[in-house]
Image (cartoon, rainbow, N blue to C red):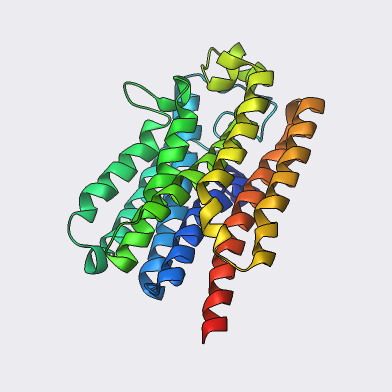
Length: 296
């Protein structure tokens, strides 16, 4: 049972709502324009979750191999570094889950066309490029950019496309918003890990800019996310406008807590940021479902 617990911890469950949120946001737009299809939406959901788990596993394996992790770090335990999971097993699990995601993704060809194979390859490479390759994104201050692209722009637009077979400016803006919210999850993670990352020479935006700048970036990302989705909320019934307002209030509390906390005490804020993102996308979807039901 302990071994199972180590693997569950390696999945980083606190962050999984990030991949779910992107799909939910896209489905909200599909519901709004009447293009929603259950099966491809569900495939996109499970594909996104599998890719994120694979990316988390790859991050743990390749950080261990490169010496970027150390025992007793402030963040969640790393099973490979602590000797609880063998490096070989983690590597096998990483590529095994990527293979499962690839098989699942092939099913989307039925709706979106053969060009999705190229998109899937790019997503798979992105899951690995975050932690490894000739230029690991996570160690060159590009982690947040990767999150905006692979947890916002790519999943939201592709999920929308395989259901509607079209692109939309509004959806693109929504994908940037979700990406910025996802980047805030990484900001909390790297903000907490500044001492550990500096100790092993890992270069993240947080180690380069410092805590104060990261708090400002977190706030700016949240404000921009609201700005990019403002029109989508504005056309909904007035009560739904409370959702972005509540989100900003929550952001205020989180940023204030960031200033007061350090080390492991910051980990709950990572979960809170992830949940806020998930709820934002969930209520966006519910708002459009509610509007559709009202019309019927």
